[in-house]
Length: 183
Image (cartoon, rainbow, N blue to C red; front, side, top):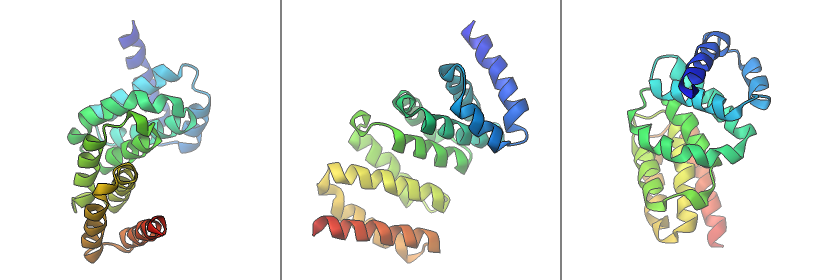
C-alpha cells in the first residue's frame, strides 16, 4: 500500500510542482504537507531516480520541506550518504549537502563526513555552490576535531589560488572566522 501511495504522490508532485518548477506552490506545500513522511519519501524517490530535471528540482523541494521540518533531517542522513556518489546533477549534491547541514551533528560519523565533504570540496568538477556547502561541512567537523584544522586551512589556501570570486569570498570568510577562533 505504501509503495502505491508514494508512486501516486510522485506523479502528482511531478505534474503539479516539478514540471513547472512552481516554487511558490512548493513552499506552501512544504509548510502544510499533510503527511510529511509520505511527502519526504516521494521526494526522496524522485531525487534518487536521477531523471533530469526532476532529480534536482525534487532535491530543492526536499531541502525546503526539511528546512520547515528540521526534526526530519536526521532520518535522511544515512540515505543521502548511501547514494550521494551516484548523483548526476550538481543540484542534487547542493541541496543534499544543505540537508546534511540541517542534521544533528551528533548523528555524524565525523571521519566519514570529513572524507565525503573534503573530497567534494577539493574536486574542481563540482560547481562552486556545491563546494561551498562541502566546505561548511568540513568546517563543522574541524570544530569538533581541531587536529584537522591545519589540513583544512592549507586546503582552502590551495583552492583559493584557482577559484571563482564566490569561492574566494567564502574562503576568506571561513579563514577570518578561523583566525577569530584562535584569538
